[in-house]
Image 1 (cartoon, rainbow, N blue to C red):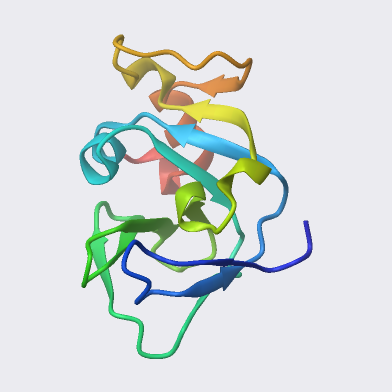
Image 2 (image 1 turned 30 degrees about the horizontal axis):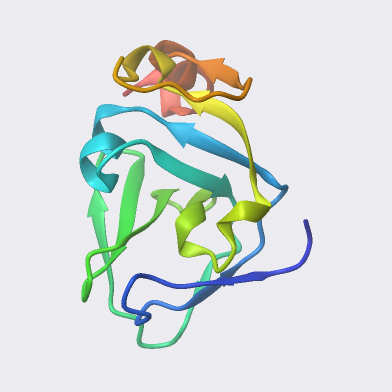
Length: 141
């Protein structure tokens, strides 16, 4: 994908554009995402392309030494997880105007997924240990 897509929070105060790197979406089952988003966090990787409208009432929560969660301070909508340096931005597919354009391709923290649900499609899966080994600085949580 090379076309920027429009998106916004629930109340519309945090409008943005972002350019997903593909039509593939991912699911995070970590405990933080479950608490933050009210369930699994469905997201699409956008590199560092997210641009919010000037004056958007953004809030952020530093959830770890290397990641933060971005949300609307007005309506509370969960918008994006990103690294502290904002070089890796994973945007909620539901913040985009048309989330149906994405295909679920990966699940991370699969060993943390609650047993009360399962996704029907085949995906690439990574455990918590595999995620930290690949993405966390020095493999730290």
